[in-house]
Length: 370
Ligand code: PLP
Ligand code: COI
Image (cartoon, rainbow, N blue to C red; front, side):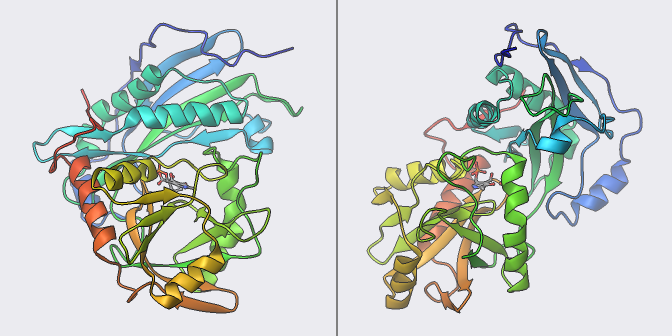
């Protein structure tokens, strides 16, 4: 039977608010805020919405964060029908909580849903779930530069069924985690490992979708990066093993001595919202920026000749991270003096300034919660 993947409930969902009766004591929360890392501390609540064939989205609630009880035959546990998003809430200079381009996350979530044969959710319901959770957990949005509340919307196939077809039941959920820097070294330039044995995505595959399976397949290459003393892995394309694509969890940019910038074109990579924003910011300042194929061979030659002065990775979790050293089987090279540079720093300042309300927001990217 053909399944309906559209949101059958077109009216905005009403969320039932079920406050956590045993929230984390304030003293413990504030103590934890003193040493924020990435993704280990979680807020008191979660947003949950269910979907079932015929009924569409229903049972929307903001409730105490708690383990799910799911059937061991749930399709996600067998066939990995799962997608997610990553976004951050900031406390701006006026103390207001803001999100950065949340509609972009909602749109990409639905693009991922279509690729994984999952139901779409209206942008309004997606954002209402995120905002409803933030409203309940407002005290979990930390203050200070570099600190934020990382929101993780995700959806998985919960139907108990072992046949291989799109599931008929799904759970959408948003959890929240107060975070500091993604990398242990903080703002220090990162080192990256070029994977020549493994690839992340092929044409026609799921590279442009934010599905958990992409990350599962990247972990062996990420472990190789750690084993070689690197912070992150960078993947080459699957067909020729020649073209630089992206990191395990970030997009990549290259900066040249004439001030121009190159970033790999869309297709098999994740269309990053940070990437898209930095492209717009670079273009605003008149920087010549090209989205195009760039090979590992060119990269080595440009770094060696000094034509490449900076390289950086970017994403919601990591923001903008300078790449200092690049290692691969058979060698390593440094970018510039290995310490980052002014173009990366200027773009980082511009982006974070807008996100935190310190700089003007000419594109209307910042969305005030509530
Ligand atoms: N590429 C991958 C594989 C990612 O996981 C991420 C992080 O979400 C990005 C790129 C950057 O995307 P965004 O800037 O939307 O966070
Ligand atoms: C993000 O930047 O939001 C990501 O999803 C990257 C990583 C934590 C997987």
